[in-house]
Amino acid sequence: MTVTIDFEAERRLRLPWEEIIREIVCAAAAYENCPYECEVSVLITDNEGIREINRQEREIDAPTDVLSFPMQRYLRPADFTSIREEDAGCFNPDSGELLLGDIVLNQDRIESQARDYGHAERRELAFLVAHSMLHLFGYDHMEEEERIEMERRQEEILTERGYTR
Image 1 (cartoon, rainbow, N blue to C red):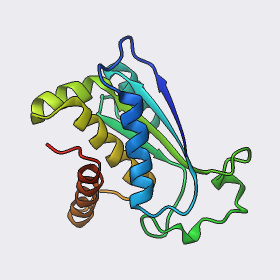
Image 2: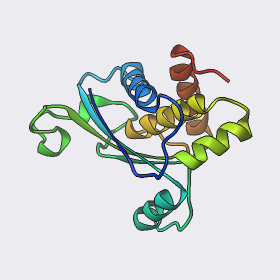
Image 3: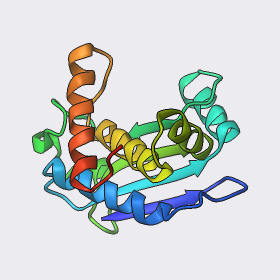
Image 4: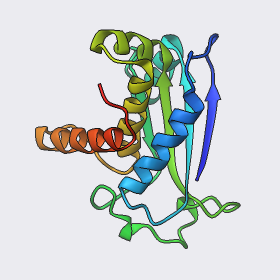
């Protein structure tokens, strides 16, 4: 599993963010029974950085807590049967790893939402990574049923790793 983490904020989170991100990325892949080694890129930025990405990519001129940019399309969430090893765009030609996609995290929101929800910043970071990983596996929350299923999966991933409220 390759998890590339870049930091584009003036200050750093005061917690073991690399360890937490890698742990939850791996936990989510295991939870979804991904049959491949995977590659995920993570960017940690601030309100202004994520606002600019949100504006460019989604035409929404506002900050958010996390953005997910999946590189795979699934017939159903986490259904790996449609992914073929011979599809050039699905795998990194150097490592052979499945290219899952990119995650952009807003450290300002990690801090503020942890305060607002009354839990630790490490739990908020883990939550946002789990949430985003599920998006990279094809889950969404546009409909109520999808939201409930996604929340259930997030909680199971987090609880399994000890990130509780």
